[in-house]
Image 1 (cartoon, helix red, strand yellow):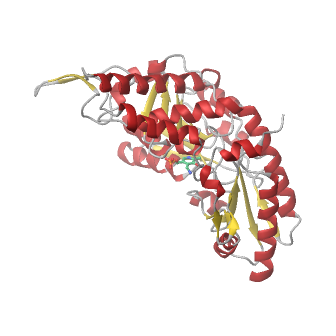
Image 2: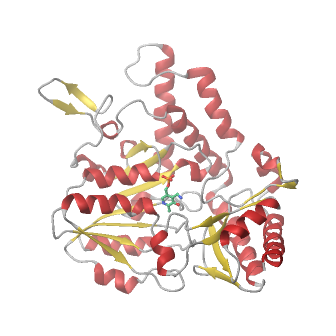
Length: 402
Ligand code: PMP
């Protein structure tokens, strides 16, 4: 069933504005999504009605804030089909989640960490830091010219030395959807721990962590209609229970003496300090918003828009699209003789917001011999008219720049 764009867009007040005298066409959703009223209301209600620090409080507001925070955790657990709510750790976002995992693992010289060429810097640098610390080696799955990972090479790189395998579900740069189920199964049968960067999957796909079979899944709230500063690390209990804590401080302890500290149970063991209480509550509201529409309906809607954008842009002279035809979320392109930065700046003058540059994927850009692309990325509230506006703006900008 087609989405009712008018009703959906009415949920997002920010979209009603004009930019440079033109209706805003917001196509930078892979960077961050806009927030619906349900999320804004949840944040506001939290501060208007129940703001207090959570856990251990004896007073009414502390109890109300604690139960809202823990109810939010349950909503996330249900959304991810986690076996237990305690496997959901609130973090500041995907970057924070991946750093958490890379920081609690201990590797030795000779061990290997396997990532892919498609990774965002936040799924590269924490592993490089772990390798530097431990003497382990970073290995990289190559990518084909069409922006899909070389699965044969991946299988060849998996050995008994592979201790961690980390890759994204959907590439933020090219929109490539990786065959995660097969990749996780292969890495698990090689005996590796597996982390999935689901930052771009969360807004476009249903995530079932039990079906996925990975050990860790990381995501950011702000890419799925929630505020910035809140994210999730889902981790298998058996794996996290056996690993040490990360940051030390309040909340993550059972008992502290100057001689020795004992640590709290999951999920609190990994949640030192006062968390982003409002963020967690707003994230739950965002996931409820997504459920209200249905992730399948959202993704079918976006797929149509991406296909129309790909068709419209490739009909323009000199346009090269990156990534496979079956992409999700993002569409990256380059135009012969036109710098992506100039293009982005000019189409902003026409009200169209896209991202240009390396998209935090410098090694991927280097692999393709480019410094960056122009990326249009889609969300539930985008429309076919906006795709037309994008294509028209790009066409006009090109004739001005050439
Ligand atoms: N991984 C991917 C695939 C992403 O798209 C992003 C955000 N662009 C990140 C990781 C990092 O997310 P955050 O900045 O929210 O921590």
